[in-house]
Structure formats: C-alpha cells, structure tokens
Amino acid sequence: MRVIAGEWRGRKLVAPRNDATRPTADRTRETLFSMLTSRVGSFEGLYVADLFAGSGALGIEALSRGAAHCLFGEQDRDALDALRSNLAALGAAPRADVRAGSVLALGPARRSFDLLLIDAPYETGAGSVALDKLNRLGWIGPESWVSIETGGKEAVEVAGFAIDAERRVGKAKLTILRPE
Figure (cartoon, one colour):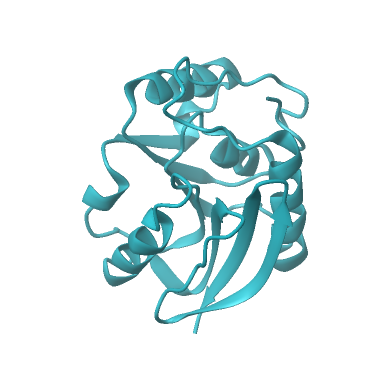
C-alpha cells in the first residue's frame, strides 16, 4: 500500500499483521478520492474521521492531501499498531487523534466533521449502523460528506441521508452520501 497523492505521495504504508482487517486496495482508494475530489474540491483544512480505520490508509490519504485533522477509530490491536506506525513514519501524529475501541462506542462529537470515511467489515451492515448512531451524536453537519465502503452487493440505506454517488471497484462498492 502506498499514499496516492499529496504531501506523502508514494510513501509506503504498513498493513496489520493479521487477517482481521481488510486494507482498502490502492485502486479502490484512488477511485474513492477521485469521487470525493470532484465533490469536495480541496481537502485543505478539512476535519476528517476515518472509522473502522485499519492501517489508517484512508485518513492518511486525506491528511496527505491537506486535511487539517483526522480522527481514527479502530479496535483491532494489530491494526492499531500498524496505524500508529504509519502515523509516526509520516510525522502525522500531531494532526491525528487515534481512538482505540469500537466505533459504535464513540460518544458525542465536540464538532461535526467535514468528511467521514467508513470502511466497516463487508456484509455486516456495520457502516450504516455506525452512520445512523454518529449522526444522532452530532458527528455529521449539514455540509458533511460521508463515504461508506461495502461489499458489492451490500445496500447502504440510512434515514436522513441521500446517496450522491455509487461505484463498484472490484469486490467493493463505494457509496457517497449527504445529509438530506
């Protein structure tokens, strides 16, 4: 895995040692960030949340492209080790907040995020469940963008959100949502 664009373009990222997480493939990440760039424009100054973060590749990509801050949520110990290693290697720790634990256990937000990147385990519906809960806890504002990566056949339906775009990339489906 490598960072695709921005300040850390081409830098290698380490993946978790176990099979409990599924890192987003470079091609899928490139497609997702192309979709987001056409909607968000610049990532400069954005507050981002990378949930079910794994190695942190999605949030790190946003930071590399100029995001001001990223909150990473992950519960797997090996994934947390890889995430912290990646942040340290890039010098990104000052712009990051790592929350060790279940995304579903996160509490109320201090402020809404500009962009939420949700990459829950495929075929579980956990991404939709997390989005619904985080919306009620103030994580999403009227101008927020949300990306959910799922398996190709998985439906994403969350009350109060409209699908802006969907695209299949290999076995993955990328869904971009906006609050209604």
